[in-house]
Image (cartoon, rainbow, N blue to C red):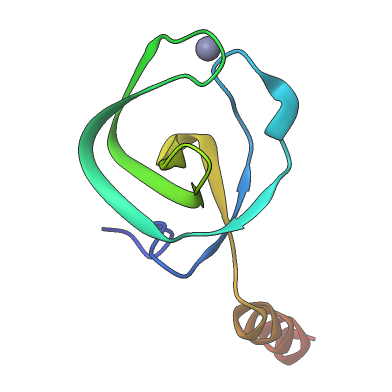
Length: 93
Ligand SMILES: [Zn+2]
């Protein structure tokens, strides 16, 4: 697992959807990660399989999770990592 792998508790942004762009750009905190699963696209019903399925939000109205393959998400670095990158930039000058 690389350092950029998405983990529980990370902030992530949705960068790809199956056929429905409505949640592009949404930001979530990762709640759970499932390995090797298939879920159904909420819009067209097609199966979407992924080595790592990231669950981001539980919907109590139907008892299901909003989930995305990890390849459809980008991890947003924690602020302390941004601070660190900035400090390195400053040290280079
Ligand atoms: Zn779809």
